[in-house]
Length: 266
Image 1 (tube, rainbow, N blue to C red):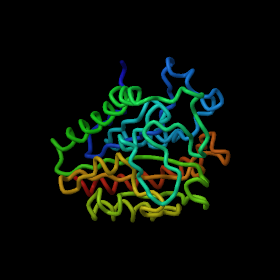
Image 2: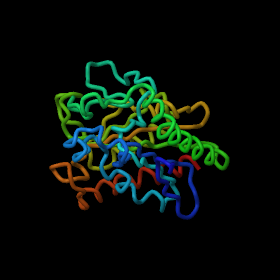
Image 3: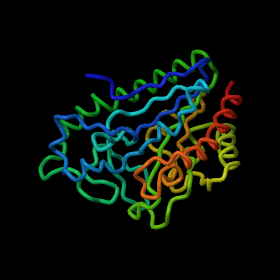
Image 4: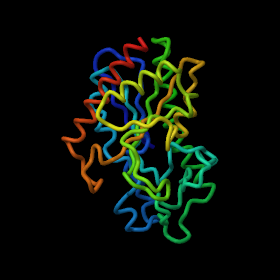
């Protein structure tokens, strides 16, 4: 089986930052496609469309990027393996192998949702290989640098009423309430993001998913941050097409953030 992820290698000198994009994948294995409702398979909603393209400057800075090949409806790389909820405030929370989309609509045909054996297979085939590769990339950085950073990159629709009634802010920096990264790294990231033109929230309404919480061990010099962003700041208003002009404005904010983080870590 081919790897369930893609790697964009750094150009030039490597720096101690890894960017993970776990929800941009769009593939569904052919042997499973008939299990999904046709209209859902046609739309493949809930994907973090084009986020890996948004960070196209990263390799030039020496950053390694890993991004998912498969759609999160196959298995969600940013969920607890037992589907323990990330939040307990009444919002709709999709699980490891969700049976609904973010609006609560079913994604599988009747009787086709995965059983525990199939979930275990997906864990072994898709989930843990992604985690093992992230772990390996971070370990490689730690061999060369004293302190490293994992940046987990996400996006979401402007409005998802099943999560909150109001529109989401432009960007949300998450670190599980200051526990997944050192205070210095958090401050640098938040302050630099705040220098841009976008509204920045901190840990509200998202404080980092399973990847951030799993890998973030600041006492072991492994920092992890999640950046969630509103899709309309880099896509068109329909949230279906990449908007180059909007995306460039986002990159103009993100790139100085990483430049500052690199100088802080090295």
